[in-house]
View 1 (cartoon, rainbow, N blue to C red):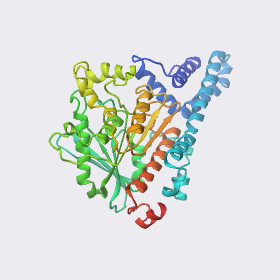
View 2: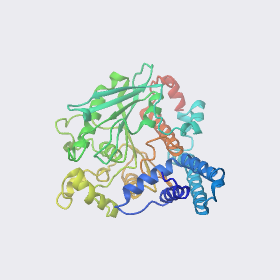
View 3: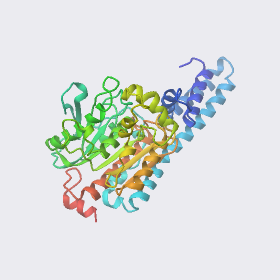
View 4: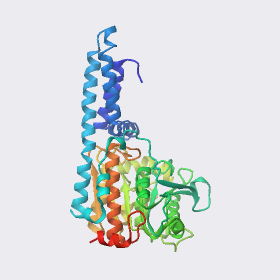
Length: 429
């Protein structure tokens, strides 16, 4: 960090400005995303540091000379912008509840939420003041279970409530992101998995082979192998193999959505064509849904030509466009598609929100299932990787959606963490 107060405030002001209006263009996308993502989700911490630095500048440092008017002006502007971001993050609670009430019915909470659950919906400062504390002492993790042949990329982790004897618990499969080229099962989806495991779910977080070493479709083949393994073995860990929900963010959102929509696409199940890889629902975060540029969207075409082709598929899109179309969830929307809860930020600098809007529109046009869409104002890519005001609000919304889905779509079943089958049936009314 620069030693000069003015220089430091210039850095903070630049971060805040980029968070409010990310720099456009392919060449600046990654830098703009990283800076905007951290500034947006860590706005309370950044505001506190800026305020402390400003107070210090106005007190003991001022005795050695005049405080910098430019630095103070930048600090004031930054704190105003950061305060605006915090206000927007807090407003997420109203946004998500309005969305769920509108799309699931105003009385949806009557079926899934106890008084204790209602109290847990409130996000307090303890939930976000330590953003990288993501574990839960009430959850145990079984590490590195092999789901297919291979090394570290062929393993998964299982999250379950500690000390609870589970039977037929609902199952959540988590697929990590990272542009199909980086990332691991230990890095993403942690807030959601810990919350759901504490509620009595079994959560399965998987690794998969990465590009460019392993070209597409190795990634979706591994996801489907993990689903098939989960159906065959999750009962050993207390899970119900007949009720699987899949989730993931970014590339993981793409893989989750594609897996959910292609249980009958045999090209993605070589050697295990007859395995059941269907799921009951899908919750993709900021996913990629058009890998072929079918919609004509400029950002989608640039991603196809400059990244997916050379790095992931290692094929020329101009000569192999059908492969890109087959890999696009947008190509596989059918009437009997599983239920979806699609989540995307309108300031996403890596995957345009237009991808989510187009995908949701297609789902609503074709699918007979439930389609819930949450578009988050002022929100960047990867917003829920660590704990923040916004991420906690959204994860609680996903938790409520999943519990609603469990009760209404799966039916009343025994839930060791939340009462008996009779209790669930009573809640369902």
